[in-house]
Every structure is written in structure tokens, then in C-alpha cells.
Length: 222
Image 1 (tube, one colour):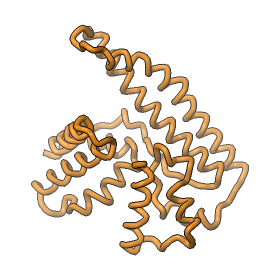
Image 2: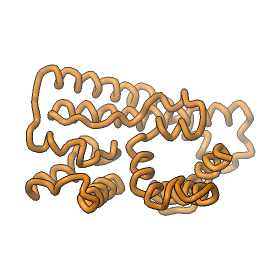
Image 3: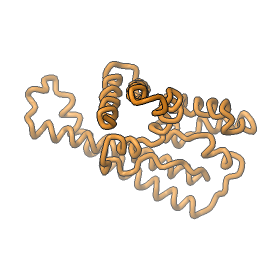
Image 4: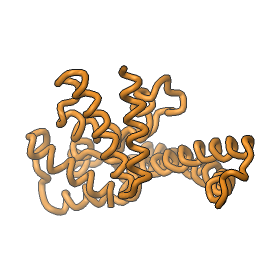
């Protein structure tokens, strides 16, 4: 429901700002907010991206072929890589007494989870993009080799791009961004990432995760 909510919010805010026109009819609006290829786990698609295609989609075998390739790559990431790594990661994180886990097993569990979550999420995004192409829609790329990042800031430009740009445009910028001085910039970064953590789930561990990410972004700027 979080993706559904963010898409509906971006539409409402963009219409209010005058950046897009209202949907031509209610069916087009419903199609946008409930578009099934990416409804469950993204990418978060802005209305401006699909506004024209809701009215005038061009179908072609070239798009279908490209969509099938995207879908196949995503499915390989999900089924052959992410699901294969999941048991190793689950074993490491489900032990009742983590103290019994040796250093080598700990690092193995961390590495397995690191790649599991990437291949799982980027794989789903690729499948959604592929399905969109088959239907005549162009969804944005959601991952850009994030583990090749040179910094935390660079990482958030590459990981779950549709979420990080949403938080930037509709939260960070609205709080003042980096326009109100150094201290306020740090506060805005922390607030943005804390709320980004809560978006993932309403519990303390997600809030702590958001604070951890925000803290590194602040330290990096310092």
C-alpha cells in the first residue's frame, strides 16, 4: 500500500503545483494509481512519466521483445540469485543466540543478505519495467549498479532511485533542502531519512535504519 500511496500523493502534489494537468477522466487516474506491473514494489512512477502514454500508447513487437528481455533478466535475478542466497541469509539472522555465530559465518550471512536484497528488489523492478514495455508504458530504471557507488550520497542516487528522488522532491526540497544554511541542511537530511525509514515500516528498527542512513549522509557532508 505504500507504493500506491506515494503514487497518489505525487499526482495530487504535482497537480496542485501546476506541474501536470489533471487526468483526462477518472478511469485514466485509476489506471495510473493501480497499474499492476509495479503496484506491489515499485518503481514509483510519476504521473508525468505516463501521462501521454495513458492516452496514446504505441505498441510494437520491438517493445514486446525488449520487455520480455527485461522480464527474463529480472526473473533470473529473483529466482536463481536472490532465492538461492535467501537460506544462507535467513540462517544467519534467525539464530536465537547470535553470539554462537562465528566471524566467518557472520560475514557470510551479511554478504548473502546484501546480495539477496539487491537481486530480489532490482529483479522485481526489472520485471515491472518489462511488463510495462509489453503494455506500451516506459517505467524509469530503479537501480543503477548501487554497489559500485563511491559514497553514501552516490549510493542513494543509484539504489531504489524512484524512492530516493520522491523523498528528495516531495520532502527534502519542501523542508528547505540545502537553501537554509548548513545546520538546517543536516536537519533536513536526517528528517528525510527518518521518515523514509518509517515508510518502509512503522516500527523502531525501520526508524533506526533511517537514522543510520541519515547520520552517514550528514557525516559525509561534514
